[in-house]
Image (tube, rainbow, N blue to C red):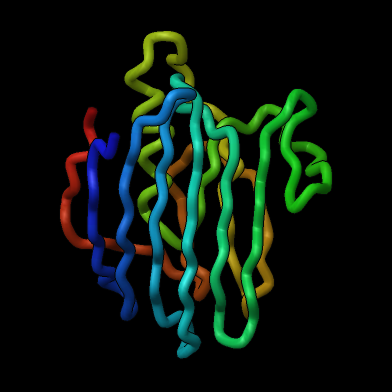
Amino acid sequence: MTQARVLWRRLDAPGHDACRLTRVAAGWRLEGSAVSLESGVPARLDYRVTCDRGWRSQRGQVRGWFGERAVVLTVVRDAGGWTVNGERAAGLEDCVDLDFGFTPATNLLPIRRLHCRSERQPSRRLHGLTSRQARWSLYRNAMSGERRTPSGTRPRASGTPDLST
């Protein structure tokens, strides 16, 4: 059952992002599409993150294009940590969140988890997907709120969606 739907308009560059949050048997699914113009390059990225009932990211996918380049990314948590497109990502074992830097939607995940009684400390975030010239990479960061768009600026969005459940 869909809990919320949201449409953001970027303020720092041309672009929009639409997403929805759905409750599923195992927890939550956040999915959407971001369309933007980054440094003069058009991009369309469809994304999906699934979380367990405690709002811990379990799987993320991004599909789309950035200019002429196809983007296909699958990130999965398993007993050994994280895999990226099927390959083990060393050093990220204690990361909890997927934060795709091109959308404000993934900020919801650690915010919702802070409301869970079982976790009171900020967690390490697999801080996302960033790009330079459409070369995508994952990197680790503390839950600091520091985010950059692919062009190196901070993303801003208009609207104040209510994604409470």
